[in-house]
Amino acid sequence: MKNILLIGGSYGIGLAIAKELQYENKVFIASRTNENLTDLHITHIPFEALTETLDTTKLPEVIDGLVYCPGSINLRPFRGLKPESFETDMQINFISLVKVIQTVLPNLTVSNQSSIVLFSSVAASMGMPFHTSVAAAKGAIEGFAKALAAEYAPKIRVNVIAPSLTDTPLADKFLNNDVKKEKSAERHPLKRVGTPDDMAQMASFLLSEKSSWISGQIFHVDGGMSTLLVNG
Image 1 (cartoon, one colour):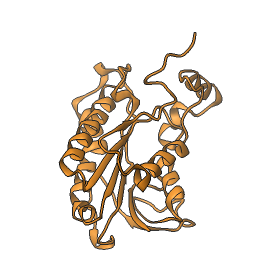
Image 2 (image 1 turned 120 degrees about the vertical axis):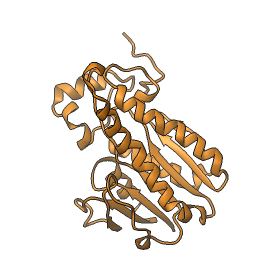
Image 3 (image 1 turned 90 degrees about the horizontal axis):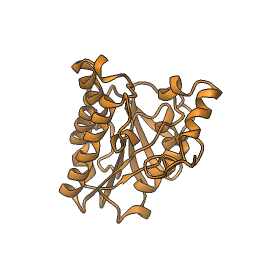
């Protein structure tokens, strides 16, 4: 049974991952709240990724898998974005991620082969209007993941999931009615928006032995958006 640490996990994709993993792994969730977690077979650790250092005394000596879930969707015209907006997105998506990995690196390196799963966005590979800030932050994650995977191979595998818009609380303002959901679905070749379960199943695969020969990869779980043209 593997020890898996989720940073964030009380809602959205993180919660779906916890539900996917809870019975075959020992799951630890470090998040601000244990909302939605009380009925799950997990251990909760109170943690604010932006301001706190993770207390490793509450973790097992060996961590076999790490998933960093916090992120942002800050879509605004570039001319209206101040440098502080870029700093905030970078802090949430990337700098806090780096701090967490450095904190638990000793736990990851004592595993026979641990797996780190990070989240980017389809916007990091496609030029999309109003995405300059979030695309910059997610692009940093992709470059970092490849370099980290090279540095720690074969001991630690590092892979990235790059979703398109996914139906989570974070994306609620973009999908909060049927018209918005239908328009978003039509933008994707597979004609639907992503679900947390779509991401959870990919994360579960990347944490498992089934992906033991995969590292340094960016997986576009995006309904075909990044590679396929929509007919018509």
